[in-house]
Image (tube, rainbow, N blue to C red; front, side):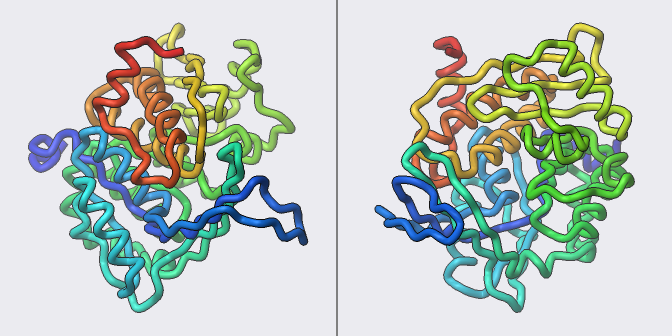
Length: 324
């Protein structure tokens, strides 16, 4: 570990996307070819990486974001939201392209579908990672997703690995990844659908899956070079698959946190940001997942993404009261 790393223990560097979320609320999501009436519209700050950075920062972490926005009102909104949450945006550059956008429909049960257009996110390159080398060298965690180019993700993973940071990869939006990226990833975060796609499995066990089912999944991830994996199951909690842990900690099922969900948009990012925050603070993977489960659940109780994310006090109050 370098001197810079030792002095900056706990820093999280998030490399990736910033999007303006164009959200329409409706009673139900439309079927293909169908038009439905909406009952509300909002433009909110989003993008998986920006969301994860804000989520981690609101939970008390020291966070720096590497990305790109356009020279437009959406870009200013995104920078203001991230910096207002305490995220260092000094490595978010202004690109000669419009800020990325996500078009989101949210139904009465809080479920959503999302279409993204990369915009300025598509201009992020390995050169931007190289320009952030000093801050990556001082990171405890490097957090990545797949809303920017694979070359950029791979460069950031390599830089994080070389710096001795824990490389966290959220395999979303799903894409096939090169083995080199799998080998550089210390912690993989996937939902059940992404896990199924990655492993080529017809079905991933649900919350009622027995230990033998999940043990098979753990071994299959390990065969692909991924030793530490978190599988989120939405309202059914999550599962920790840690092949590097002791025998009793290799498979840990995290119980769901029951809330009245209003909007699930960005809940996965809240989970990822919370995991990164706890890992940067020295927590075990299972403890990080349990903490993140609460943060993600609380994030669904309000509309929007970044403005809905809880702070550390919110999560600790739930922990003190007992998770139900």
